Length: 382
Image (tube, rainbow, N blue to C red; front, side):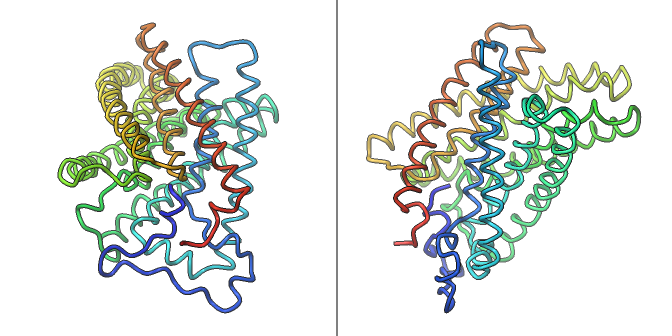
């Protein structure tokens, strides 16, 4: 999610070079030329604080109001970014096409889907307090539909481009490759919010099983990519300093899948026959506990690598937003396990991870605002 990621130089034969600026393009919204899809990560990272904070097992006075503020901030940022990205495509189509043909940038198109889904889910979780339930249902329906459609398209189109158009080598594998395939998992985790508002019977069952299908789609695709990513680390060593925070992206499919199975288990009794609903409740724990264990192992590894990079002089880049949304999914995953197991340990884990999430958000947001104020984050490549 670094600014450098959206303006990379070619590293292998066949990787498209940054296109020359057409005559007059620099005069048309020049600040938007290098605004890549990675910026949607800031919306995701902001929305997850609202969503996770409102569903924590522990609630403090005023906590829900703070979550409402974060939801409103995420919704505003989404509207601004959608407008800015539309201007990017309108005035800088050459750069936008180059992004799609760049293996370092194309995976970030999954962030658009997840930003829409995160804000839509937050609308039903906390936004309804401000705009009312009917409006919240309408907003989430639109954002969930658009986000799911874009996510499914990205999950198919980006791997296709990587196979037939991008020229990549094993040493180029990074956790960024997970972004397009994890988007359907976000749909699987947030789709259950709409189930109570659907007609009983076929509609609810279709939504429930459709979310499970997206859960399987994303999970199996993730299992295909994770060995490539871990193998690259073992064989080629640590990632470049600016990319080190992207190691936390691996937590995304782990935490989000745990959140999904627990959220779907909550809705199963009113969506499908009793025998299946009981099985889904058992699956939420049988699947979620081992996956959360692996997530904590990866969190320890990623944190150690992050400390190493910090000691070696890692500066701020937009990759810092990778420290927010993936950690937030582990918060919601741990909270879901706390509901279904009754273990206080999972409640404590959710609270501890939420504190880490808020800390990471403060660091990323402060440095992003500073970079925007100085113009560094939207500057042309050096």
